[in-house]
Length: 204
Image 1 (spheres, rainbow, N blue to C red):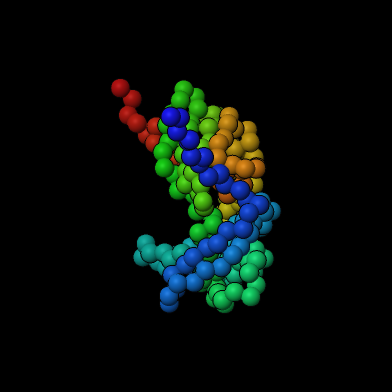
Image 2: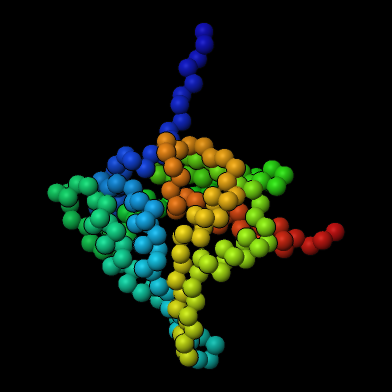
C-alpha cells in the first residue's frame, strides 16, 4: 500500500503569524511579516555607538532600539484589540519573526547549500561562492562607520546583502513566494562566514 508523503510546510510571507512570548506569563499577538522596505528601514534606523572610556576600556550601546522595534511592531500588528505589548515585548516579537537559524551548510563545488529554520518552515538556499571583489564591495556597502574623537558609530544596511544574494543565487526551496530580504541577508552572512573559516585553514 502506497504511503502518502507529508508535505513540508513552506514559508509564506503573506500569511499572518501568531507569535507567543513569555513575559510575566504567556502572551501572544498576531502580526504580518514586514515588507523588504520595512525591514530595510528598521535596520537602517539602528545605530550602535562604541565609546572609548580610556585605559583600554570601551562601552557599546544600541541607540533607540526599543523605540525602533516598537515602531515596526505597531505597523505590522494585526490584532489591534489584543493584549498590550510594551517596547521590550515588541522587541521580542520582532526578534522571533526575524529569526533565521542555520541548521547545516555544505560546500558543493563552487556553491554553498544552506539549510535554515525560519518561522514556521525549514528552507534551503544554494548560493555560488562570491568573488573577492564582490565580498569587498559588499562589506563596504553594508556597514557605515563614523569615527569621532572618543566614539565610533556603526550602522548596518540590508540592501547590499539583498543585491549580493541575487547575484549569487542558484536556487532556493521552501518558499511560497519571494525570499524576504532578512533571509537573503542571513544566507549571505553564512556564506561569508564559511569563506572566512576556509580562508583561515593552514595551507598543507
